[in-house]
Amino acid sequence: MPAPSAHRSYRSRLLSILLVVAVCIAVQWWQARPLASGAAPALSGTLLDGRPFSLERLGEQGDGRPVLVHFWATWCPVCKMGQGGIDAISRDHTVVTVAMQSGNALAVRAFMDEQGLSFPVLPDQDGSLASAWGVPGVPTSFVVDGAGRIRFATVGYTTEAGLRARLWATGM
Image (cartoon, rainbow, N blue to C red; front, side, top):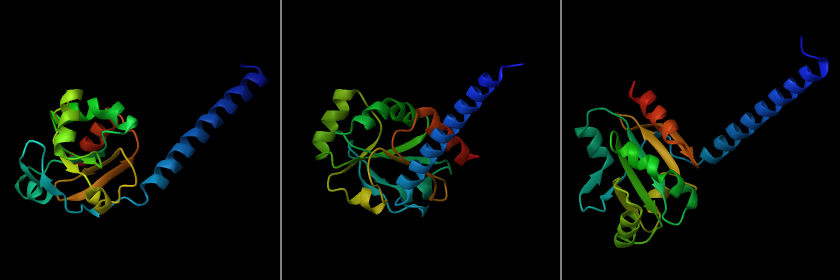
């Protein structure tokens, strides 16, 4: 049987961990307050590769699978930490990203080429798309179901595994 002081130490550590988890959840909730919810706002434009994109049309023509909508910026160091995960997810899920206030299409294309990234990108030079979605900062990710409803939304860094889990849960 552990000594009484060891028991208090374990309990103290457990309480500290629970407090950190509670603070993280509260911060995430606070950051997500302005984000769009319910029916996904309109999202359309011309991708960097010149193809037209429409989230609404994708839903009409799609297979009902969820879509990851990811807002990011070339100037955002936190976004750079997660861009490899977004690129990997785009190989086996429907993904559209929005490069918020990162310059024109040529500037964003140069960044993508320099970083070796291939995920689909809608440039949002003036931030109007981000504003319509209530994006307070980047990175921000949304998982939209096959019916066009936002099922998950997060602000800040999210792991590839976390995004994949949200896509999986939405596709169930």
